[in-house]
Length: 109
Image 1 (tube, rainbow, N blue to C red):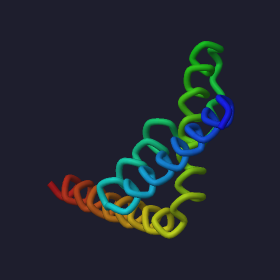
Image 2: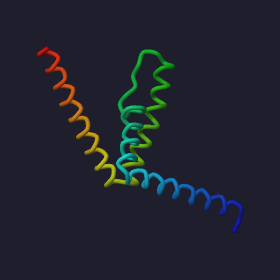
Image 3: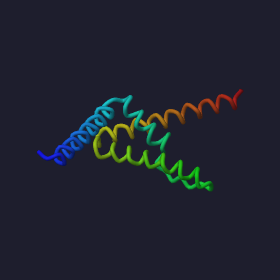
């Protein structure tokens, strides 16, 4: 085996290991929450249009990371991705109900 073939093989093995690691993370509720946090809260997948160029570049870099994690979740763990989405929507809905109840209670006081 040539040096180039060995390098290619190591790169392929490393890529496969990263994919398996990602799948392992997505199999747990804690891992899915962490991935969701990276994608939606920290990196966001929404546009980063801002007036300040440096600030926009910084946020666009963060968004780019979020998009790559989002793609990996969809491609490598499609069932866990769907589960993560559902868990996040339930949590968001529960949080909204809770905050609405608090606001209502504050208005009554």
